[in-house]
Image (cartoon, rainbow, N blue to C red; front, side, top):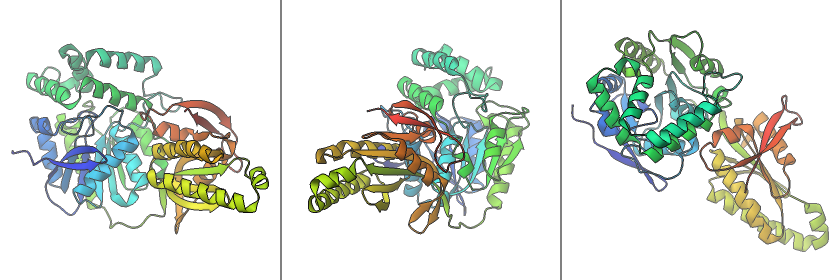
Length: 445
């Protein structure tokens, strides 16, 4: 079969390669694993068969993530927020208003974040053996611990692309295919063409640090979780946390490549078809995932008394103009202005942090100090305003901040893994009106 043409969507300054295959009333975005290469995908008959089967159900959109395959190579680690921007750019370029997301393993983190942030763009989710976080914790023992991650990253740094290293990866990721010479040859070529050594290390670092466990309860689209046959694992964890998600046990564990096992493939295709057949027309959602930024001027009462009414009013107007300029720069949306403070929302936490940092720096030129607090959580839309516990948490986090400090919740820190933003531990705090204590982190300058 002749591979489909390759298109490029612009996501900022980066070109994201994608292909479109098939027709149908419902679009289906196939977000493959961490290593992608659109062209070599069509050299693997088992994968081609799976893609063709998907194309019988709807219009399939496939992409190479930034830093992989035919998409632009980048130096920085791609965060979930950046990858979400790329996915939206591809959908826009392909004129896809709404789609089912089909993804596996760590790709479920991107799909869940996208569905929670843009529920109007996601018709449903199919998640194959999804993972929610990269590091093991008391409630999530299936991930690797710190020592295991250190060893894995060291091995990737020194071995990515070498034959012996890729053979070990094949034995781990597709054990049933390790003795198939044709598959082995394809796997080696696909990995080498998909990721450079630097890109591989960057992706695995992001996979290690990212955590969407707090995001999963905000996902409110039809979701099917295809889980390995083991008694418990990440699939069950994800299913429990996504409201209404349905768990389907697979007949075997083929490793990370679901399409190598015919029985697994049949179950996956049947469940995907059932989900797509049950979809209903899009309805507006009054609950979304949003990042809220609260800012507050420090010592404003004393400064106003020193300056007098006229000079203070002039200074506040200059402050407000500066804040609004920075909000525009980082795609923030002004929600409220209470005296000398602002409430704004963002569709990504890294942009909110960078906006908070820019504000702290720029208001010093006016002789002012500002404190900022940031939280990401489920919010209720009420006209042009946001309401809900997430807004209260953001306000309480801001109240804990020191002059010039940008303070964030643990949810924000987990979502910006790979951004290069550093944090200092701010400890566990009881927040007024909030049921449970929250861990906060100070953004390091």
